[in-house]
Image (cartoon, rainbow, N blue to C red; front, side, top):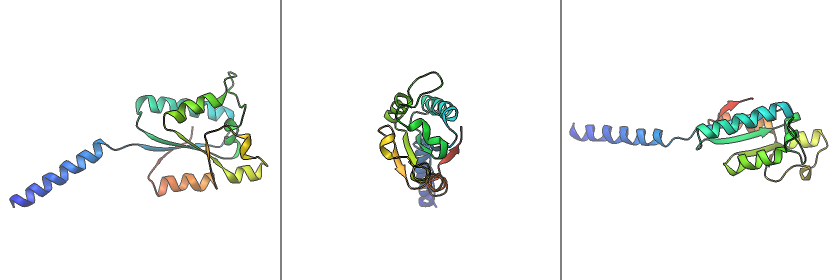
Length: 139
């Protein structure tokens, strides 16, 4: 019985240590253009200000890729490249849908440096949610 109690105590301690070191994982979904991007990047910045250890992936498809294009600017005439660069330096990963590139006749070299590419934005979001337990946010 004493041995069982020690085992239970050790398991409880291990579980609490895992929970204390747990990291939130969140996927932000961009598909609606510049206004959504402005709001979404602000959400991500605020998210990291409160929870700097959060693991964040921003997936863009359809009109959501526009803010990641060279020269794209916010409504206040600020370049998105600087905002994306700042968030990337804080660990945020940006991914662009290759199906969107094909459908819109866009080329990878039209985008700012930093973001990666994924075969399908929708499939990537689904995989992050179902297989990797990422929470979903659509700004």
